[in-house]
Image 1 (cartoon, rainbow, N blue to C red):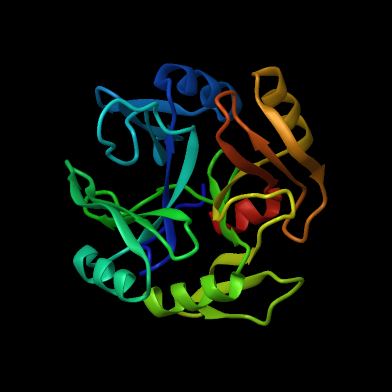
Image 2 (image 1 turned 120 degrees about the horizontal axis):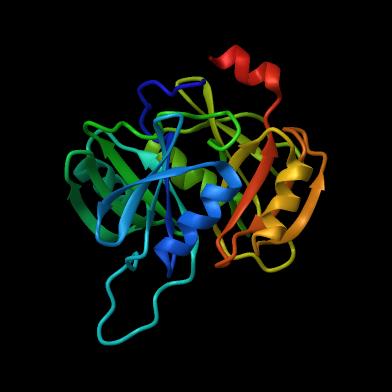
Length: 260
C-alpha cells in the first residue's frame, strides 16, 4: 500500500469534505471506496482505508457567519502542508490572499487554518502534529492528485510561488505542473468554459473508472464529464449525492505496486 512520508511545505497533504449530512456522506463513501470512519467529534470523522487515514469529513460550516444562514454547499477542500502556520499566514496575506479562519488546534492531530487565494479559491492549511496528513495515497480509494483551476492561471502560479516557492514546468495546453523540492506536487490551469468558479479539485484513485462511475450513479451521485482518457489515466469528473465535486481517476496496478 503506497504510504505518504513527511509532506514538504506547500504540498497537498490532506482533504476535508464539508457536507450537510455526515451520516449520509459516510454511507456514500463507504459504498464507493470502502472507507471506514472514526468519529473525532459530534459532527466530524476521519475516513480510513486499510487502517490508514485518507480524508476527513465534517458537517460543520467551513466559515463563521453572523446570524442564521444555510450551511455551505457540500465541497471537498484541498489542504496544503505548512511547517509554521503563522509564518505561512503572513506570507499568504503579503501575496494578496486572506485567512478565512485563523489557525486552530485539532486535538491529537495538528493545527489547521482556512485560506482564500487572490482568485477566490478556498484551501486549507495543515501543520501536522501526530497526523502529518493522508497516510495512504496513489491507490484506489485514496487521494491521488490535486489541481487548481481559475480564469487566471498566471496569477495563481505567481501567488503560490510567492507563498510556497512552487517551481513550474513549461505549460502544456494551459496547464502547468507545480513542483516542490523538484518533485511533482499539483497542477495549475484554466477553469473550463462552463463557468466553474476558481478552486482546488481533488482526485481519488480507482482501479476501474467506468465501474466506479457506474457505482457512483447507482448511489445517487452524478457524472459531469467522462469517463474518458486523460494524460494521467482514465478519468471522470463527478459529484457525490450531496453535490460535492471530485475526480475519479484510474490508478494503474503496476503504479500502485511500484509505490508500495
